[in-house]
Image 1 (spheres, rainbow, N blue to C red):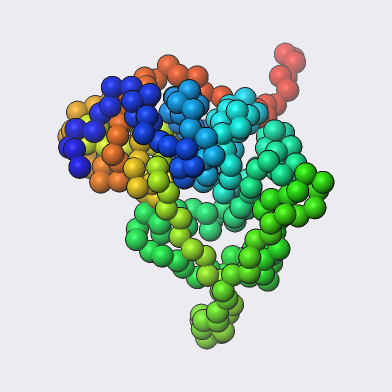
Image 2: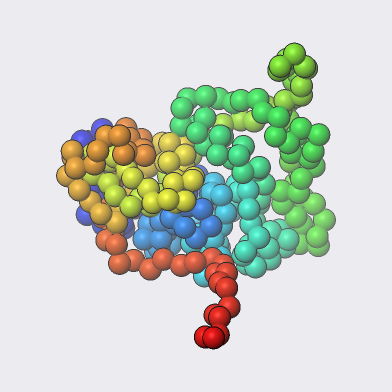
Length: 260
């Protein structure tokens, strides 16, 4: 692995992502979306992608850009409620969806990046997450074309009680795309606030991780104790600057108070 991981452009960084690739993408809502890399991937033209991300952006932003262009074949997500095009494609049979509880999705990515094949969790026990039957793909007429399979369950003793657990397989992907606030040439990354939620985990899960960073610094300029993701997980770094557009998914403000 090269020590200096800086790539001259986003286009060069994503140039080898082929059709039908699997990609883990960081971000939480519209926070921390790797928009420069997503736009470069859109322009590169890769199709039939299987994407793992907490959500799929909105209709005109984030992963919603790839979705609207028909580039995504399957989404593995925990939240999909802010994208009307996502709803249309899913219910019409154009998109496969694997809904996954949010905490389980995070752990599946972390496990995939840690060499753990699967893990047992209580989340989903007694529901269709464990029992199967969640619609993953529809026929155009609205009938279910593919449903989720049942998962293995097993009992373990916890605090003196036998409890049911469901086996969740780990997730690893061909590539990962993430956005970081700062990064150095060795790939050590620092994320900004809630953008940290899924980004380190998505990065870990990708066999090739591509990171866009707002600020590129030299090795040693990031305090080792401040590193959120060590460079061992990162393969390519692209500097995008800090003046890129950042959107708010849903703005809630208090009405202005009249002066007394």
